[in-house]
Structure formats: structure tokens, C-alpha cells
Amino acid sequence: MKKVFKLSLVMLLAFTVVLAGCGNNNAKNAANGETNAGTNGGTNAAKSDFKFGMVTDIGGVNDKSFNQSAWEALQALEKETGSSVKYLQSKSNADYEPNLNQFVKDGYNLTWGIGFDLGDAIKKVAGENANANLAIIDSVVDAPNVASVTFSENEGSFLVGVVAGLTTKTNKVAFIGGMESPVIKRFEVGFKAGVLAVKPDAKVTITYAGAYDKPDTGKSLAATLYNDGNDIIFPAAGATGNGVFNEAKSRNKAGGAKVWVIGVDKDQSIEFGTDVTLTSMIKRVDEAVKKVSKEVIDGTFKGGTTTVLGLKDNGVGISETSKVNVSEEILAKVEDYKKQIIDGTITVPTE
Image (tube, rainbow, N blue to C red; front, side, top):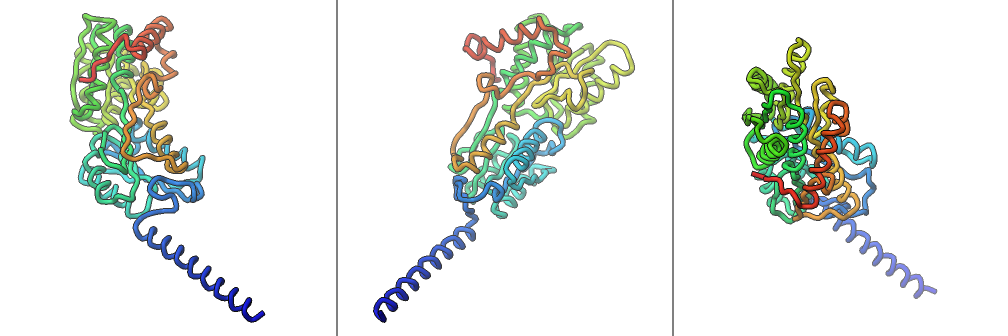
């Protein structure tokens, strides 16, 4: 009997040592910035234990388009899963790296960089924090712990270009970009190609604001373009584009020739109204952010991957509210061009 008791005591002590070892390993992992989710998300933690961070570009979280779409996706994820979400707003390029690092050091399961301009900062932070999961919109970062998501903006912009070309009364339309980059270039060339596909003699004026956070600059550029006879403007300029809407609303309210704005990234008629928004080029940043974030929760997140979303993926397109101001005949034309782009009959230029 005494032998059995001694054996049981030995086994109990051994089991206690094993448990202590596991506890030490978990503490060690936590100290290295790892969570129960592990480097690929995992499913050991409850959904409510996950934390997702987002760093905006200089356009800000309330830009009414790009950054706002991404933040709304994380807010929806929080509501759906109970996960914690937070954003840090960047006032200049110098804020990108420290903002990203703050989320990484605080043990967030996934840190988003929203925008092409964050590419270098994401690359550096990812290299210095191998156990951290990061993701970026609109840029490709070659790192094993970064998921990159880009879009075929040229395809969606082609479709709103078709709308503009078939709607303009003056035969003059314009594009305002934020800052020159491959992403905004895709918006520009796609839009111009769409306009000229249906109206070869139309004049398409291209200009750049040099900023994503200057509504006053957007308003001033829009005034000049409208004064020059352009009756439709397509801004791909973040918060700078809000000034284009403000100028158009003022002109339409004052009377005179009707002018239009084409929204970007999300259905901007929701914010600015259908009285001024002809259509919007939808870019499903929200769906991409939500999808990749859920992969972290599900344990299926894969760094070192690039996802490109175009018309065939429903990653870009035009808003449902387009039917308010765009005729059925024009929308039928748009649908025809959409099918030709998807099946490869038409290749939309990218630069």
C-alpha cells in the first residue's frame, strides 16, 4: 500500500512539472509577441480575444472613401466576432512606421497598413518582427508575414468612364488624382480608356492635386475644371475629392449648367447625395479587409501572398445607386463592356 502511495506521489509531481513547463513556454511565447493564435492566427483563442489594428495613410480615417471603407470593415468585424479593433491616423509619412510598431508591440493579431504609401514601412516592420502578422492594401510587400491585397482599379474606372462618355453634354470630362502612384495611375488610364471607347472625340483633362487630405485644393481644382466646360469630374484623391463634391453642390444649387461628380472607392452618393453623384467606382476595400482579418481568426492566414481583385472577383465595379441618374440604356452598355473585360475580349490599360 505504501509503495502504491509513493508511486502515485511521484507521478503527481511529474505531472506538475509538465504543467509548469507548459506554463513557462506560454509565458515565453507571450514575451516574444506571440498570442494563442500563433503566427498564422490559429483557433485556440476565442474570437473576442483577437485584436486588429489599422494604420491610415495621410488621407485620414474620415476621408469618405478609402480609409473609411477599411475602418468600417473592422468595425463590422468587431460587431460580428467581438474582436477588438483600433486605428491610428497618420498625419505624415513619418507616422507610418511608429504607428505600425505600436500595434505590433502591443501584441495585435493583425496590423493593417492602408494605402500604397505604407509599403516601405510595412516591409521594415515586418522584417524586424517575424512573429507579427501584417497586411497591406494597394501595395505588394514581399515578406513571409505580410498579406498583400491589390485591385484592378483600371477595370472599374473604365466602366465609370463609359458612363461619363455617354452622359457628358459638353464632351469634356476630367480626372483629379491625389498623388501620382501606380495605383492612382490605374484609375486615371482606366477612366480615360472608358470615356474614349464610347466617345472617341471627347476631351479628357488629367490633373493631380498632390495630396489626399486637402479638400480646399480639390474644390479649387474643380472650380477651374468646371469653368473650363468639364461637366463631369472623377476624383481619385481621398479627402481631397470631398472638395470636388462641395464645389459641384454649390454650383448646382446656384443654378446654371448641371455638373456631376463620380464617386470613388465606395458609394459616395450616400454621403453627398444623388443630386450630385452621377455614379461611383466601387473598390471593395471593406470586403478585402474583412476577409483577410477573418482568416487570422480562422487560422488560415497566409503571409507572403498577394491577392488581386478585379471585375471577375467583384472587387471593383459601379454602385447600385447608379440607376438613379444613369439611364437603362447606358447601364446596359456598361454591362456589355464589363462582360468583355471579364472574358478577355477587352484588356484595359494599366499605365
